[in-house]
Amino acid sequence: MTVITSTSGRRGALAQGMTLAWRSLVPLGNEPGRLVQFLLQPIFMVVVFVLMFGAMSGDPEHAARYLMPGVLVQVALISTNTTGMNLAEDIVNGVFDRFRSMPIARSAPLIGRVTADALTTAATIAVALLAGIAAGFRITASPLGALAGLALLLLFTLALSWVSAWLGLKAKSVASMQGTATAVLLPLTFGSSAFIPPANLPGVLRWWSSVNPVSHLADAVRALLTGAPVGAHVWVTLAWAAAVTACSVPLAVRAYTRRIR
Amino acid sequence: MTYAIEAHGLVKRYGDKAALAGIDLAAPPGSVLGVLGPNGAGKTTAVRILATLVSPDGGRAAVGGHDVVKAPAEVRKLIGLTGQYASVDEKLTGRQNLVMIGRLLGMSRAEARGRAAALLAEFALEDAADRAAGSYSGGMRRRLDLAVSLVGRPSIVFMDEPTTGLDPRARADLWRIVREQVAGGATVLLTTQYLEEADQLADEIVLIDHGLVAARGTPRELKARAGDRRLEIRPEHDAEKAELILAEVTGLTPHRGENGLLSVPLLDSAVSPAVFRRLEEAGVSLAEHAVRRPTLDEAFLALTDTTTSRRTR
Image (cartoon, rainbow over all chains, first blue to last red; front, side):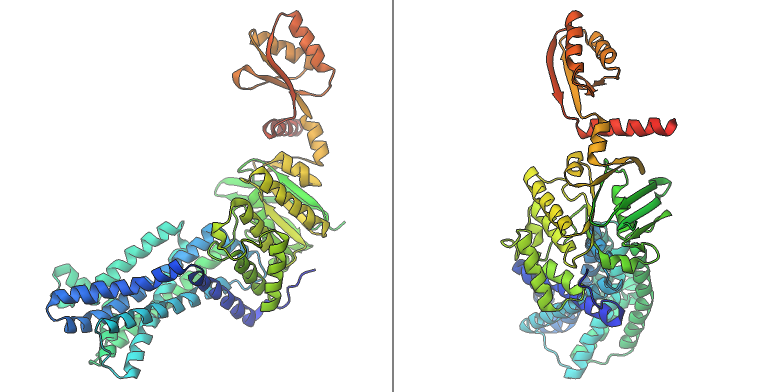
């Protein structure tokens, strides 16, 4: 009666996850406007932070060396927002109900979403980096060091996108998800050493910036891209990424299976 | 007899509110079961249980002979679900939506594309095939939603209010599609708020209200019980006298509508001349009088009244 053949098992789940990742990326191709918006945002950040704030500093070249890695961290972390927002949207729109009524692996929608978002984040980072280079930023580290820096950034972003997934699955609406995510992401990114060294900040801000894990990430990425000594920042960042992943993945999976019941 | 869809004593509670308070459903293979009821009656909850989206708090249900709680994976291989809110991906084109579902169901790329093209043609969506589903009109979206639910050629299809909010023409289009599916051998469970829709499509109607079955039967049986037609009068004066006469002649309590409109089910055609004669004798003149088919409200009231009295007896 049905054409359904083999859709279960690990291979099925992976193939279904890839189909759903495709599904998440296709809208970018469908709507040129969406693609432009997607590409413009990182370019805009480079223009504002590297060119404009850099011009304010008196030493634009030095400023670019400091600010550009910060911009990469900023655009990568902000992009995690989409994971939760899209999950919340799928739940609210009833798209998840459709998937759940089908004979597909229960993990496939989550795998698809996170995979697609890892790819778009990588693309966002690449666009920002190219814009930064056009704006005068130079990678002065070895290619391997620079790649390590970008990989570290991607890894940390992936950890945060599971937090975003968890928030999205728990959210009552897309707007509430966006509000929560913004409330989490803005202090993390702006309140870090991404744009201003903690030493230059007053009181509470200095304390927050120095304990903020994103400061370690920004310092590590900056050191790896510019070939400066990395110190302990890489290890602290890796530890944070591991800890965040260890907490957020089980939470997201649990929220997801709850939604499934 | 093996039913394609079968439910016994389904109960579902949300907090201390019972969405379903124990309903029975049964649909033989190849039939259309209409689940009729107002908003909040429990229709959607029933569909969600049968489609394995939520588990019941009590009772049991089987779809295609498989228990929805114990063997949901087996059930999912047989069913197609069309949501109350068109659950297609608005950012994908119609074609992409269909191809995605085909791929998820294990079809090869070529198979999925072929199936998508066939469904787009069948559902008159070819012109809009490569536009984002978000730009579709209400009727097109419902058609796409239905097409998406049919990609895997399900033998059992659930349609949760497929025509709510559609204009009459789009509704007629959808009705035609439902009939074609049934002609192809599928079993359909359709929920609706429209008596007319259930009448047009269903072999059997289950009327639910407040999570309970209020009435069941073929459309013909239910309409007969609701009173096929109604006699309506609008007296120019002496409304109370007119109401008394109407009650006396028909032996029924008249329903008071807006602007002094009085109506009763018309069970016997000989009643209307008798009513008019008595009103004339009493000197009550009428601003308006008519014989009309019942609205859903009235039919619904009549049917729920029947069960309440039967239950209390």
